[in-house]
Structures are given as structure tokens and as C-alpha cells.
Amino acid sequence: MKDKGIRILGTGSCIPPTSVTNDDFAKFLDTNDEWIYTRTGIHSRYYSTDKLNYQMAAEAAKNALENAGVDGKDIDLILLSTCSADFFYPSTSCLVQGLVGAENAVCIDINTACTGFITALDMASRYLHTGDCKKVLIVASEFLTRQQDFADRSSCFLFGDGAGAVVVEAAEKPFYSVMGAKSDQLEALYCRTNYELTMPLPGFDQYDKSIRHILDNPSKNKFLKMDGKAVYRFAVDAMSDSFARVCEKAGVKSTDIDIVIPHQANMRIITAAMKNMDVADDRVVCNLENHGNTSSACIPTILDDLNRKGQLREGMKMVLVGFGAGLTYGSVYLEL
Ligand code: UT7
Image 1 (cartoon, protein in one colour):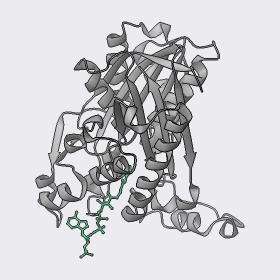
Image 2 (cartoon, helix red, strand yellow):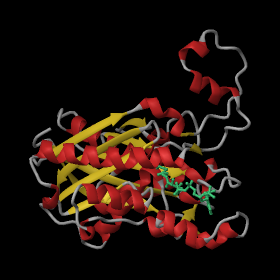
Image 3 (cartoon, helix red, strand yellow):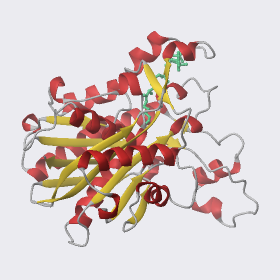
Image 4 (cartoon, protein in one colour):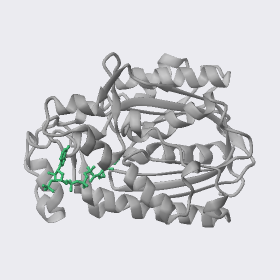
């Protein structure tokens, strides 16, 4: 969408208090710091030991509102991304609404897994440019450690907890997005609900064998399950492709971009995708070394860090690019 851009009025985050290092994993798993760091670029991650997901979300949201100088009452819409909510319902956005006094806001939760913040930004731009909404609060909050099987050494060390938020309004600046999903790889990354099936699902086998398999094994499958290599392959291609397409839409070269914030899954994935796109290392901002993968919260927590260090400047060209369970992917190009 040309000139359907956004202005970031303020940012906030909630970083949990407890840092867990790779060496901590080596105390109970057959692993070590060298293996994890070389394979992923992660040294440590934060675990929430004092807040539920909605409380992290509310703290990040309050910080963003304060940073923006915006009263909760002036928010027209809360878009909240999470794939690790405390409740099926009410939505986490409704819980946050009460805690930040956003009594006039429409509340919508989004689940495109790790792509969630990018999806929310794209939706915010569309809502803002209808004219119905003046200010949108976007929050991404994740409590992923609850979904980990700490006996599974192939995945549990990747993830951390946290939340990030931004307050945005409409601006006549360039804004382009590329979004998509490829659900033929459902089983590459999933976490089922804890419901036991209480009745047979007639005809379900014909519908999809892979889903049947997930539902039939509740006790074995209540934690996050991942085919790391399949996700890895998808991620490098999907990030490179959506990045290239969003630059093409925007009419810019990848070398023109001032800042790229990629989803923080694995340093090797990021390096490979950025190399494909000819993006110099000094343009790419990461925090995974000390935060791990916090799913949809990765990108807004980095934005908050950059903002508070005074490193977001008017006119900067930025690409946010990510992928997640689904498998989903997305990129947005915006000018600050
Ligand atoms: O938001 C999206 C979330 N997910 C992702 O982004 C995941 C993307 N994938 C990845 O990041 C990588 O696939 C992993 C980091 C998860 C794994 O790296 P890999 O290079 O694909 O390793 P692997 O699974 O092929 O394992 C290689 C070896 C195996 O041993 P053998 O069979 O070669 O003898 C594993 O058993 O490393 C072994 N291994 C470990 N060794 C020490 C697996 N996990 C560990 C471990 N510590 N934690």
C-alpha cells in the first residue's frame, strides 16, 4: 500500500527477570554451550518467573503508552499477537484493555505465531487508513517456556519469554507488505491444546492424516514439536523471498535499507537470508544472543531497544521480516 504508512509514537517492552544460560541447560540435558551457540547464536534467554503472558503484555503496553505520551482512553484498537496465551478466552487484548485503561478500544488477538507482530503492523496500517482508527496499540507477548518439553534437547533451548509494544498512528509515508502461509508444512512446528478428544471425528482421516496423528496422541504432544531442519529450510527461503518481494513493491534495492529487524530464530538462518538479499551485517539488528527466540515479541522488543537508545531516526528505511508456525511468513517495508 503506497503512502499508507504509520508513525511510531512510542515503544515499550517487558523483559522477564530470570536469565537462563546454555550452561544451565547442560546441568540437566546432554548438551553444551558450544553446541547451542555455534548452531544458533544464542547464549542465554529470559524466563518469566513473576508474570503471566497477559501481565507481560500489559507492562509492555503501559511502557509504550507512556513513551508515546498517549492516554489509554485515546487508543481505538488493540492488536495483540500471541501464540502462548494464558486463556483461550477472554482474548489477551481484552485483558490488556482493562489494565491500560483503553476503554474505547476494539480488542483483537492475532495468531500467526512468530510472524504475529508483522501481521499486526500490516493490519494496523489498514485500519488506520480507513479513518476509523486514529491510534492503535500493538502488543506482542509470549510465554513460550510453558510450551517446552525440557527433555527434548533439539528445541527447548531456543525459546525465551517477553513482550514488546508500539503505539502507532497513520502517516502519509511509504508502507508495503508481503504476507503468506504454507500450510502443507503444519507438522514442522506445532503445539497442540491440552484437550483430550472425547468423541470420534467421522471422516477426519480422509480430511488430513497429519492432523489426525497430532490429535490422537494428546499426552505425547502437549508440548511444542519441531522439525528443526524443515523449519530452517523454509525460513531461509521464505525470509529471502518475502524480503525481495517487499523491496520490489516499494521500488527500493535491498542495499538502500537502513535497518533490517529479522525474526530472531537462529543466527545462521538470519545470516543466510541476509546474504541472499545482499544486506550488510551492520544494517541487521539482533538480540537473540541474550534473549533467544521470543516468537512474535522479538521484533518489538528490538524496536523498543533501538528507540530508547535514540537509534530510530525520521526517514529511515526499515524492513521487518519473519516466519513462524503455520508455516507463515511476512515482510513489511516502512519509512520512519
Ligand atoms: O520461530 C521458529 C522456531 N524454530 C526454528 O527457527 C528452528 C530452525 N532450526 C534450527 O534452528 C536448527 O535445526 C536447530 C538449532 C534446532 C538444530 O540444528 P541442526 O544443525 O539442524 O542440528 P540437528 O538437529 O541436525 O542435530 C545435529 C546433531 C545430532 O547428532 P547426530 O545425529 O549428528 O549424531 C543431534 O542429535 O546434534 C545433536 N543434537 C545436539 N547435540 C548437543 C541435537 N540437539 C543437541 C543439543 N546439544 N542440544
